[in-house]
Image (tube, rainbow, N blue to C red; front, side, top):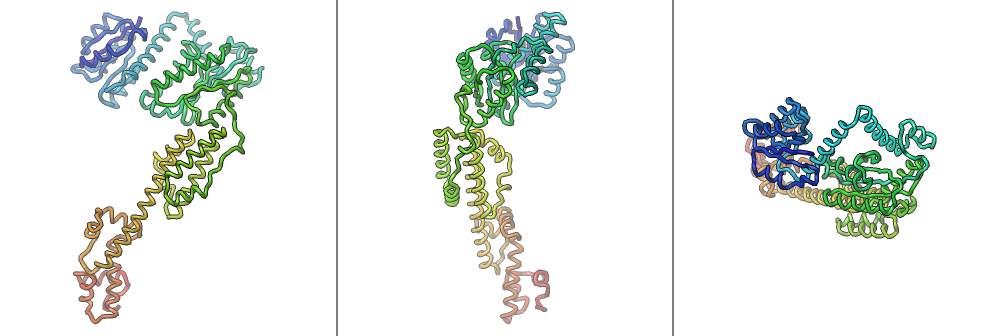
Length: 523
């Protein structure tokens, strides 16, 4: 019998939580409600409350005050706290007083349900432990953990010979028949970042592990589902014995169906051939290769014998000249269509594997970077931001990810090259304007307004493209014109100064000497 208490000064929130969750299906028999801490304390004193769902921000006393009071009185209740603010202080207090979860409003009822299921599992584990003697507690937990550790070490290749395996089973007092055959169900989860951010890493992993136990292993306690973390993936391997492969496939399909209803990431299952214990490490390695090569197989269940590992010489090579000509024309559509056609042909020929994607990525990168270098653009600086790196890292996960990365690569390349071409045109036009109006009262602001640009943007752009400031170029051009007039006309120095745009004779003389090394008179 499990009881829950919902505490919130907002009556609507209490009613939504109470009416929206199927408490009975979760094994919860009683749901109490309170609208302040004082009322909650009265209920807790009279009833054995297992889980308390409480808002933090309430008048008079807060949810944290209630949590501290419960811990001080040593009531054995789990806490799930709700708040409108992601406060560091709230979070640290919640952790300090052993709150099980901390959800921000507006909360997702699905996420709340997952957290409650995790709490219920924790409560049931505690109750089961209390039913046993101290020796029973030790045996039950340690045998299960030792069995799980045995599978993990076996799959990691820590012991592979039959002698080693038999010794480990004997020393751990495990009931694992040495002569039987076993198969592995390898479950790979990819593109998991969004789900982890939404549900939290521990809740997400707990939910998946629990689903594998219930649906595939049909167990309530884990002694055979091993978790492995990849670079951009979460992987589970469960060991099965004596179950028909078609039944296992049906269970995997049910797992995928349930998973896709709740999560946005990708789940794929491979079922290995049957092997003796000493071959399970090699069986795991082969399954990993199947995932590695067959990047386009997603959200499916496949048997090991259904997939072939391709030979290295089967790799497709792109027509580099064709790609280069498309890039020269800035024809992104032709490039993407060519890639899609290539992927289609590779799939038909059963050559759509990781090596193909790797080579395609290298070839596309080579041609694009060569084009950028030709135009004097540093590709490494153009694609060094976090988003570019993230897309590049995911490009080998499948053809969709590769298309997404190539599209981004080309879009950013072509846009930047177009911007550079425009900036060169602007610089040329600015210089021409200076040549035509150097004798007038012009400055950066005046020129910027002529080209519909802000002075700061024009100044930075001009400096970036020419290496000098606009003001410096104006002054240098005026001095060049002054030198011509001093050599070819009868004008006085002051008249020359005015003729080239200076209204301050002293400033003109100073600047002339700074640029030429001599005074106007000496010149």
